[in-house]
Image 1 (cartoon, helix red, strand yellow):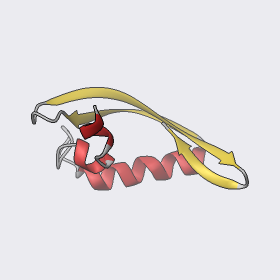
Image 2 (cartoon, rainbow, N blue to C red):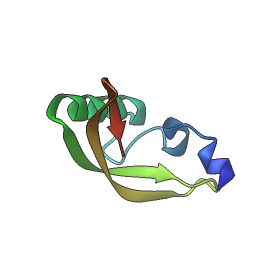
Image 3 (cartoon, rainbow, N blue to C red):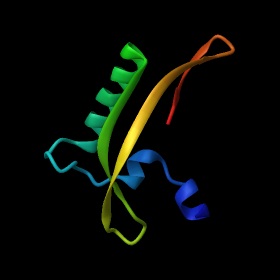
Length: 73
């Protein structure tokens, strides 16, 4: 568990999502959607430490905390 917590989100995803899109570019688009609309929900492929992939449902929600914008997952 501590090994996973030390990783950034891009280190926990394959280079490409099942639709062929870049995980890094798709993540930036999804974060932008959440910032613009307030929330977004989508399926995402993550990668386990052993290299196997698994699908998850992600919900990103924009929050205002102490006058600053944050994304809650």
